[in-house]
Image (cartoon, rainbow, N blue to C red; front, side, top):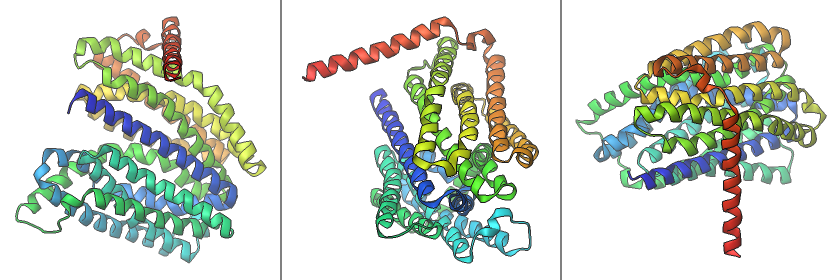
Length: 444
């Protein structure tokens, strides 16, 4: 792949991620406004099992589908078959876990507030969501980056449109939102199948078995290294389902959803810099610390303005019922700001062929977060969950800083923000604005 194509793909994926994140924020605010804190919390509990179990029982398809279509382009028809087959098996296993959880006489916390119909919808949502996600990763793995972005966006746009339509015709309920969530997966699945038409073939050959084993072995191994980091995103919400009232869960969901949007800012900076990092190790010794410092600086400078915007959105768009989300929101954005730049160092460790550090960091941070949640949620409920997440993010960042320092030999002072970084960032911003102004003047 040429440098121009690579940059185009990165730009397309970044733009898609930004649009997707903004649309999801709009969906979160709209449902929160219409349902109220208690029902918004109940909705999240109904969605948690599909989100978590679809990851656990995906057999690492998100990783193998990203790699194998490029490694075995002539076997893409079989990879399509594997995606369908493993999605069915994974959905069945996820459904079994959900059924056992709700049927066995075990403590269920606020999950017990889910009605029989809502439980059925939660179980039914899993296969649709899982299949849509797996097909989207296969589209991306086949080199159709812009098409995979469309698959992701059309699902979110469909949900937003359906919510607005039902808003006009009647009151919105948790059950209605779950039904709409299932329906919005169908356009994504249909569009992904359309893009995969050249590979639509459900035949099984003698060579399919060995390739399936290789796919499973690779996917599961890679999945085990990432699953702890994924579960970290939802662990606090799941534990709140047993330790906090539904109203506070609804408030925390809004705080967490808005706080995660802050990642868009440092991700934009790091995505702009990373393609230009040298493959030469000697040059990277200088470039990586610089990108890390600039990303940290950009995020920290954005922290207070973004916090004010988020606070205004909670207060003016959602009103007094969600006022309890403001304090955890500020705590969470501090943690997000701390951890955002760590992706730069994690990427450098991967480039040095040190993937074991990602596994160690993931499971250590997950374990620390679990202990902190158990200690703090019973005392401070959603404030405790926010503090636990922020402390876990701080630990993760310090872990990457120490690993990078030891593996690269870079002095720790080179990772600290200095006056030169302020000058460099402001000069880059001024140059960007000057170019935009010149471009507009030329167009006129």
